[in-house]
Structure formats: C-alpha cells, structure tokens
Amino acid sequence: MATGATDVLMDFDEALERFEPVLGFEVHVELSTATKMFSPAPNPAAPGVDSSVPNSLVAPVDMGLPGALPVVNAEAVRYSISLGLALGCSIAPTSRFARKNYFYPDLGKNYQISQYDEPIAFEGTVEVELEDGTLWTVPIERAHMEEDAGKLTHVGGATGRIQGADHSLVDYNRAGVPLVEIVTKPIFGAEHRAPEIAKAYVATIRDIVRSLGISEARMERGNLRCDANVSLRPRGQERLGTRTETKNVNSLRSVERAVRYEIQRQAAILAAGGTIVQETRHWHEDTGSTSAGRPKSDADDYRYFPEPDLLPVEPSLALIEELRAALPESPAAFRRRLQADYGFTDGEFRDILNAGVLAELEETVSKGAAPAQARKWWLGEILRIANQRGVEPGTLVSPLHVSELIALTENGDLTDRLARQVLELVVAGEGSPEEVVQARGLKVVSDDSALIAAIDEALASQPDVLQKIKDGKVQAAGAVIGAVMKAMRGQADAARVRELVLERAQA
Figure 1 (tube, rainbow, N blue to C red):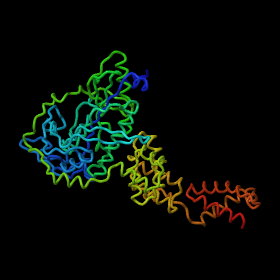
Figure 2: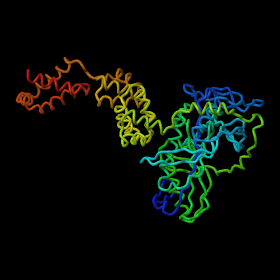
Figure 3: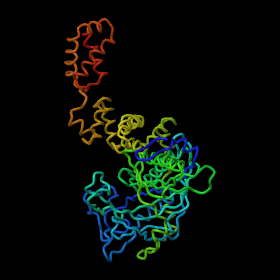
Figure 4: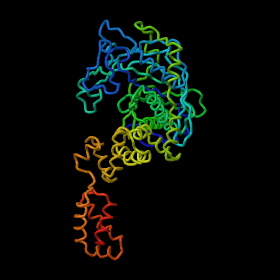
C-alpha cells in the first residue's frame, strides 16, 4: 500500500482484484439562457455577461425577498428538453418542480427549486468512446431542471476554506442560474477502465451540450461540473457498497484522477476491516486527493415537496417533435465526419480525442487554419504547456488566437521558433499573437539588405568557413547561418539566410 496526502491507498490493480467498483455520475450543466431560471436577472452563464461585480446580477427572487415569486424561464425548458432528447431520454408529458430543503447560506430562500420525482426527462443512454475506440453505454436515469446556488468567499483563513476563516461573503450572482442535472444509473462492469470511463462520459456530455448550443460547458468556469459517486463491493457480493460523492470536479483529468483515488482509498479502508462513510468528498487538485465533506443525506432528509408557487411543466407533443427535429448530429457522427473531412488516420484522430481538444481544433480550422497545422499546435506546444501546468489545453489559449498564430507562421511573419515564443506570451496574457508580435518586435526580418549585412559580417569573421564554401563544402554554411540567426535574435528565415550565404560566398 502507498500513502497519499492524508489517506492510505491500496495499489490500483490490487484494489480491482479484491473489489468491484460501481460508479455513478451527476453532471450539472449551466444553461446559457439570457436570464435566470426563475427571475429576470441576467444570467452570468450566458456569453458576454460580466459577473465580476458581486451581487450585481440579482432580482428579488434570487435574494429570497418576501413576496417575490418565481416564474419559469421558457427558454430553459426548451434547452432542457433538447438535452433530454439528445441523451436518448423520454420527455415527461408533465413534470413538476419541488422544494429541496436544507441550509443554503448562498440561496436566500433557504431552499432550492429543483425537480424530484417528476423530472422533465428520464430513461436514456449515452454511448461514449474510450481511448482505444471501444464503445461503452452509460445508462441515464434522469435529467432534471433546477437552479444553481450562489458562491461563498471565506475570508481570514490561510486556505480560502471555511475552516479557520474569520467570516464569509455571499455573492448571489450565480444564485438562480438555470441548471440541468444529469443523473446516471449505477454503472457496473467498468473494472480497470472505471477512471477512463468517467473521463470519457463527462467529455461526451460536454460535447453534447456544446453541439446543442445550450451551454459553453467550460469546466474551469463551472459551466459544467461533475459529482462522481464511487462504491466498492467485495467480489461475489450482490449488495452494493457504501458510496462517496466527490463534488464539483472541474476538469476531465480531475474526474479521472478522483475516481482512481477513491477506488484506492476505499479499498484500503475495506481491506483493513473499516467501513466507508456515506459522505461528500472534496477534490484537491494540488495533492491529487479527496477529503471528507459532509455526511451525505438521503432524499428523505431533504423534505422534498411540490413547489406551491409553480404550475407543472407540460410541453406539447408539437414542441417536443420540433425540438427533436432540430437536434444536431450526434458527437459520434460529428467525430466521424470531421475525421473524414480532415483526412486524419485513426491514430491521429484518437490522439486528438484523448487530448480532449477536438472542439478547439474544429474551431481553429473554422477560423481558417489547415487541419494539419491545427493538429500540430494543439497536440504539440499547447499540450506540452498544459501538461506542464496540469490544466486542460483549451484553458490556455483560444482557437482564434491559435488560428492567428498559424496564419502568421504560414505567411512568413514568424518562424516556428518565434511562433512558440509568441504562444508562451499569449498564454501569459500579453494579448493576441498579432499584439504580442507588434509589442515585442518579434516579426521575421524579411529585409534582404539587413540579412546580407549580417551575413557579410559573419563571413568576414570566419574566413576559413568562407573558403570551405567556395570549395564546394556547402555544409560549412551552417556555422555562418547559426551566427546570422544569433545576430538577428532568431528573427530570420533560416532557409532564406542559407540562400543568401551561398550567393555571397560565390560572389
């Protein structure tokens, strides 16, 4: 066994020999409607909405003010139905909102309006593709509508957490943001591929909601969050083990790591004769570990009851069929079409999928970049920086900026070496590639007279090299080219320098 940040962990392979993992996922998708779920306040999850000023995007309903009544956002209902259909779900002819009661310091009403026993969508399946091309079917229990909570900022402590803080500040901007929560049925048979299936499932949900245009699905911004449920049971046992729920995991890589960690942690406890506590867990990106949150309540503890201020949602068959007809191609069909359009081999395309940059690559190409160049940059320098920092590649740079970088390279304004330098500066927040090039003066020197002056100086300082070139030993030109590139601070086209060196040597 190995020791993690605070827990004893069993070797992953040994854990899977002794115990069977059972998975379940709750994925929360923030819908990008113009306004919130039950109020007319601007929705901070909508594109272009500035939520940087706390408590600036609120209405009486969001604050829980007396007498303020909720009104259902019709666009959010349409989005929810579209998502349910894309998940292969049946759409309920009637569904009802309920009050979910427990202490919410970041919901002024002190309860959440959600759906409980009458969700908008139920009984679906999602097919996900694993890294080797294997297809895995994930059963969906339900997709229901609800509102998000606000955000707490804990002040005065060393860690930014509630423990040790002097006080907490509440920002209600996010309170009331429209959510769809997608709940899977228990997933059996995952075995050693459990972490991989977790990552692939969340990636597929992200791809689906993006293709529908109902959410930006940026995990690092909280547009899409995953609660990962993991339980273990001894081999041969029918009864399910006690589950833990790792909350609000906000990257694909972290989902994969969190599931692996919980399998190893729970296996060590069970093997030592201990018991698993049914609780929420917090994921810590820095240590790659989970820690205990609060005891996990069962549904009865939330005292659900029908929301008295809202009528049932009863979408017409005509609306459901209209939304069904408008569904885009599935992510699987989209991937097959892109691979054919771009001319990538199966291996090349799988590398893109495994890196999680397909959407970014597709958008880069749509901005004018050649597919091969887009693939080169996303799987090369951008992925290297992302792996180095432990983040998703798409969080570092926008597809628009990548396409601009490629264009600057293609038209000769940048060499590959300069382009990599520009990328680093774009990632550092210095602006677009064009802005960085102008501010830093990194453009390739295309003035032959400047190059010739540098070449003549290099040739004069290396007369023996000059003679070798004159004698036909053109490989000796490399020393001159290197000197010129150094003098030009890398801002010269090496091929053009070579041409000019050979011309000058023969003059």
